[in-house]
Image (cartoon, rainbow, N blue to C red; front, top):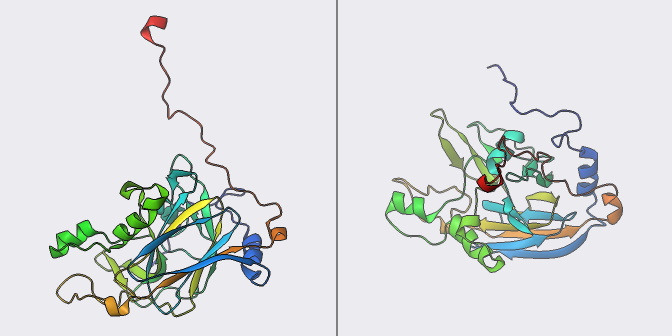
Length: 282
């Protein structure tokens, strides 16, 4: 099958052109980096945390395979948040090292850059599955009620709602996610599928914070997705649920020389609109 070119392509000097040497140095300096904070998110819960610009944060499969649903906002302006669909277009439907997570309009800038991915060599499996997807989104109690007729308060959407509430955010701020450690693809009917996560204890996905961030992660109630969640064979996957760990690091300052947070989008037009003078001034 002919490989058709991507619609969005980088030009010299654009934000899509990543300084791989810079991020490689940041990722490889694991000795001098300083651990700022670490914690574990228990099963079927979520937690929010702050990451200063220029710091690293790592999501870790501490006990084995487990899917995590990730959200991210500008710490100082929650209207600027992860834009999953544009990231999918600018980077890929499944992200890995050197891919960037982009923010919503009118800001449109890299919020974080992936610096290390222990599952980066997974590639494409025999079913077309890949890791760390932006294709799907979080499970939620509304769809769950529609499919099962039952209420369940620990879907990833609900977990994230509870996690961000102490930070002044609401359900309306929770958005489409990056599914960390999740293996997904499109089947021959062009429908989204999920299969068991290949993550193992110690696997990680690491990010460099390009701006001050508020992050949140839900440990999916589906666990490692080895058990059907809906349909005739569905059962409670509690036995395949595991915690996820978060580690936040400050890199050696010398490695940040010359780096600065990216500016918001340069477009400053009025979308073709012009302000009209009030009638009394005409």
